[in-house]
Amino acid sequence: MLNFQVSPGGSLSGSIRVPGDKSMSHRSIILGSLAVGDTEISGFLEGEDSLCTLAAFRAMGVNIEHESGGHVLIRGQGLQSLQAPKEALYLGNSGTAMRLMVGVLAGQAFPSQLTGDASLSGRPMGRVINPLAQMGAVIDSAAEQRPPLNIQGRAAHESLKAITYTPPVVSAQIKSCLLLAGLYADGETTIIETGISRDHTERMLKGFGYEVKKDGMTTTIAGGGTLTGTRIDVPADVSSTAFFMVGALIAPGSDITLTHVGINPTRAGIIDILTMMGGDITLANEREVGGEPVADIRVRASELHGIDVPTHLVPVAIDEFPAIFVAAAVATGRTTVSDAAELRVKESDRIQVMVDALTAVGVSIEGRPDGAVVDGGPVRGGQVNSHGDHRPAMAMAMLALRAETPIVVTDCDNVSTSFPGFAELAANAGLGITVVNGEAN
Image 1 (spheres, rainbow, N blue to C red):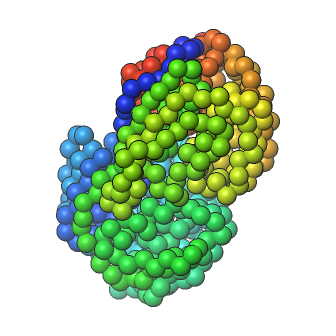
Image 2: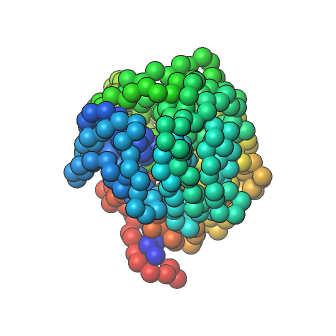
């Protein structure tokens, strides 16, 4: 077991670029593998989850060359080119990879199985299994529609059925799964959303030359088209950037610039929320790269205040709430988060994990079924358990910048799934972090 030992105090400074966006890294491999022609990827996240997706498509016969430094070349052969894998496809800790890939595999003429680690094996998959069943897919799962997933192959030359579907929860993973399945469907597949979710899949499909129709909250794709190989420059992950943003805001004297960050409006709710809390955050060098907006973000230490987080921002900041809870822990006054029940079915129950962790270091926080109430105040320090979830682990490490005594974060192995090199980069920026092996005292 890897643990973080983080000294109190300090500040963050300098100019850094965090690793590539995990959501886009998964999608670049998936779509590049289904395209005709070469797809060149730069900025690919070399974390365990993204590499599992790469390995899965290699196991289905796709020619993928991977060089260090985030460079990937995929020599795609088209939508119908995948081959039956010889064994189960292991996707590590990634719910994104599993929910998107089951949409692709539902349209294949061979059977397959998707597996993951203990955390992924406990995550709900009915939200994609049920609409795929309406499309004609046959998917068997473990108890309560959880992994492993066994996908029955389609009969030769048999397409999935196009459907019109309104997901029961706002989820880019559900939408993306059905759009990918829609590539193999007869007719137009339409997803009608009740709220805003990430649109990386739609943007990237268009980048591969595939038409996607968008009309307000309705997204439509027709089956039977062709994806054409392209170039993709994956921007820095705003979810990974969030930890440094919060760290700089809460640590007196901090002034840090985070470069080439993806600021897609369906992902950038963290910037809006922290700005509402009084954060000094400025964007510079705004530009578009491969259809995705990016910018350099300068963050300076600020006196934060509590807010009621607007519910419309929750879906576009859902992965960043561990960091937001840390900002709330040192803000003046009360922060209230609601309509965020989705946090309970992430890599861990992130509401409970953060309630337990913040309580352990002296923060006043009350968990609720769909969120939490945090009263900002002093942070004592102490030992907390991340329960194998990378985002609470990194968030709690940053909280040490305002702690009275060191913070020890246990069970941090999975940080490498989304942010390889986090501890080294954080230390270079000014966080007093040490990685140790073995059980913490």
